[in-house]
Structures are given as C-alpha cells and as structure tokens.
Image 1 (cartoon, rainbow, N blue to C red):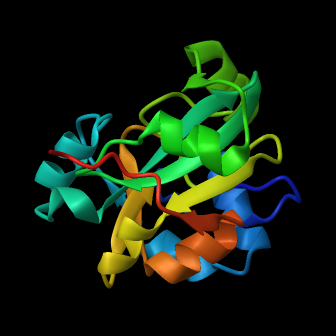
Image 2 (cartoon, one colour):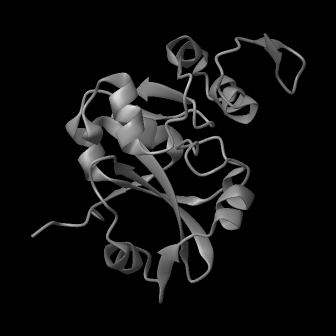
Length: 172
C-alpha cells in the first residue's frame, strides 16, 4: 500500500504516486485495478504494445512539444508520428519543436517514457489526435515506464482536457 497526499491508503498499482492521486481526484479509482505493471520498462509505444499483445495504434503516446517555448502535450496513437507543422498551425505558433528532457520533467513531473495523459505537475494545453478514437480501448502510461492503464479514448481525451485535432503525419 502507498499513502496519498491526504493520508489515505491507495492501492499499490505501481503507478506513479502523483498519477494515482490524479485518478482519485478525478473519481477514477477503479482504474487502479486495471493498471498493468511490467518487469521491464516499456519506454516506447512498440515496447508497450509488445508487452500488452495489442496493436501499436492502441498505445496512446503523451508527447511534450514546445510551441514558441510554451509546453503543449500532444496525445497520439502509437503507430503514428506527430506532424509538428500541423501542431504549429493548430496553435497559431511561430515555431514548434520537441521539448527537451528537462522541460518534459519540469512540466509534467514525469520522465519521458512514463508521461501519462493527465495528472501533470502543471496545467498544459493538450491536443489529442483523432486517430485515438479509432479504438474501443487505448493504453497509456501510468506515470512510470513500467506501468500502463486502459481507457476508452473519449474518456481519456475528456480527462486530459484535450482538444481533438488532426496532427498525425501522413505517410506517402
């Protein structure tokens, strides 16, 4: 068992304590029982999909970008890449780049490879690519590279406070 900030016991699911607290605050305590913990890190979408035995596109990647220096979270299916030009256009920004490791940790409170779609240290603008809606369930990081949780995509997008957009890189 672990203890939450208010001193109550929380199920030790292996999720990051901040994420476990976010689940509780959002009324999603039932998600704790569905969190999967792996003995080896699943830092990439491909590693997570292999460990779960699901399609790569069923993994929800939580990626931090810097739009004119301001952090923005993009939720993308694991089989796709983010088109930074489409993100730039969506945000009306001058320049969008992948965030540096320090900015990811500072903004979210989590390490790359374990960033969940919500429960971050700071409030950040969130964009979710519509490709996530193509599945009944997607899997996302639970705050560590060793843990993931399943959720219906529309519910995940709602709890992340995300705006649905089309920012997936189109392949030729």
